[in-house]
Image (tube, rainbow, N blue to C red; front, side, top):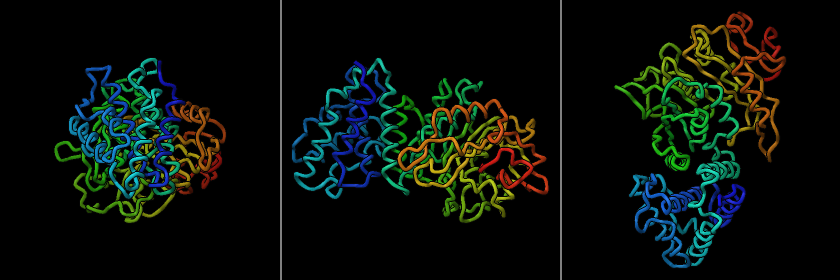
Length: 451
């Protein structure tokens, strides 16, 4: 019998409850998700001899069950995960959490009881993944995404940035056109991939095999991304970790940046120390040549220019950035003017406020399309800021909002007070001066509010 998603979610969330009190939610996700991974691959190995993940002797969930109530449970769980990691080249991926950490899990009996309870929750017969066939293996990937959403919600302002809300990811995946790619195996890249949720949504939209590349500076978050890929049957995805994409991009070809068919990204907003580790004025990849260097204390355009440089001549991409990129002057104004003149920007989608974990400021999706730049007559703009529902202390796009955005954008439908193709002549004239903040210009304010 297949596992019901609701039942799976409730049992796994109970695992989180077993850890509460000893650590921050941003930390206990490492424990719960690691145990979820071990349970899943152990169950699958019992029914699939050709499983992508080898479960070695002494490296299974059953070995963890045998440790329940024992003094050495913490150290034993570390060793079990270590064996599983060693057998599958997953060191530094699934062994990030220390199950013998007294500061986080308590000393003596407190640790024994906490870890015994945690293992018991995953031991529940309702969580037997070996029997999960009718609903498809992706149920576990869905549960993983569900947990990360809750971790992002509970982690507060500074620690929820590893996750892009699923609805926003789906919009981005839909508007870059990956579903209609003529490439047999298109490549897709995220330079700030977090837990990989955005990459996976794009891969789902492709409806064919894709080759996935991602880079994430935070080692623990990169580990989440790699586990996430495996659980979504994307085990061959390349996730580079531990380096800043701007100072040390990890995907190269012949001493230049590797280029991709599609790029999606949700980079950190207005990063102040974006140039740490390299000199932008002497960038070996020429990412700023012909545009100018972004302000020292604001990296929004640094990430956007990295994306542009990482796209093939036929490439398409989508990037989430704060609204300020649409109208700020100085160096950013000059970069924006250059991008507009090259006609790389296909469209701008203004989003509701308070959608993202880590910030409540309004943001937009910048859609890039190099392939059709020569024929482009203007920039298609959507003001989707009013379509959302309240969900606790956050806002969320509803299905109807998502479908409206995607349908209107892909068909370039002009809807009063919602969307319009703004011609380049309007954008560049003296009144607008390459300002893309729609309400500022009476000539193009027919879209109305706050793009």
